[in-house]
Length: 240
Image (cartoon, rainbow, N blue to C red):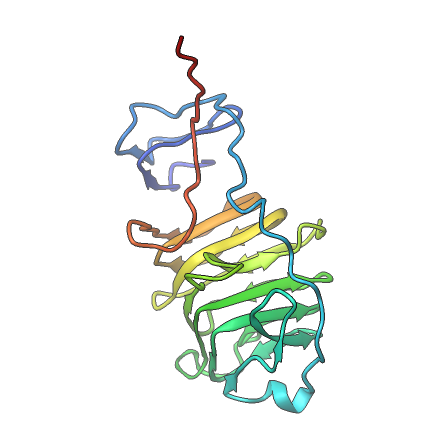
């Protein structure tokens, strides 16, 4: 926490190294940050990355308002492959399934060329798999209402960035209407919440680095979410 304007309210803070905080830190369940804690285990480490397969949709198909899987993926779920990224400039719906973003950017009204009220993504039971350098770029020029699947091989994963991707930065600048239910999982990539981003729902953020700047806000409540538990401060006890 780099200046007095930074604010964070959480139950507890666990850091593998030291914690540099300010008076803006409010802890509800701990008296102080737990420093030099054990490394947290990756809750999704056992999930195999999806194979990149299936036909790429055409540029004309990218202009639709409803996306739906068009083939049976080897993982056992229905899937759709989008090559070269896509910038959504209208209100669109992704039907349940796996969406392979093969290169490019998955963005929403990236340059703000249409009104914020005219752009949005609704997705229920969806996992977006980012591979071959693909990255998120949500600039806040539209609303998000996204829900990860509750069952199947990718349950709990809303965004799954390939573990082979390094040097990639995913940007999230949501707005007050943004809801994400599920994990933003990019264990080898950077995740940046910037500007006036506001994201609500049961949101897990797992990245190589995670950065909050500007007036970014992340509110997460997973009491009834479908994500896996992130185990912190785990200990082993031997009983004779």
